[in-house]
Image (cartoon, rainbow, N blue to C red; front, side, top):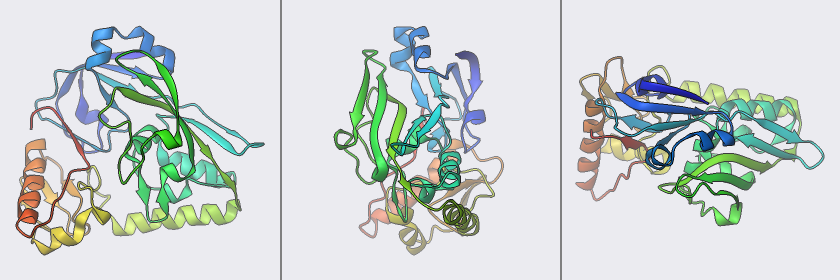
Length: 283
């Protein structure tokens, strides 16, 4: 385990925005949790790939635990994948496709890690990460209990699971894969990546879709005239308005101001735009 002091969180989030945390514990194996004090463990925010978070410009007072568990193995006899929560989702989508297994390739191009994807029940047009899930191993930061949750006990829903707003830290996930043709799967992987690069504004830092709606509520955002609106260095993407971009020097305050404007105008046409992105600290 590595411990980083006064670590800038902008260096660990896809938004490239955010102040410092007093301590960051980089956990590469489950036993590392035992090296963290009870107080720090309970108070810590949990960080994966940092792709679904907007951090206050002033930083946070809490410690952060960055999950960097990179173990992965496929049991070819049983077609079961066991993978650490810190493995990038796209990396695992490509690996399973290369080895000729269906199950994760449809999630190619979605940023973030396996752990974060499980917590948010990440999905794309062909399905959600929970579709092929068998179980989740997690660590309780309040009791230090380790537990395996079967899929049916994870309360998966649209962009939701039992692990959100809970003391459970996802450490591993297991998936039941299906055998397929690796050439066809790699072709599909490439097609999905190409589609995302063409249709999503990936040239600027962002946290993806801000709102917990189908397609991020992009049609609503266009209807209320917020597409292309700017606030300082923050921009509501004209290409895909559910993305709010950091065009180079945006602050968390500017990004969140656009979020609130979208929510307020949407209520004016009787639409709710609940946030999918999580905020840390006072913005």
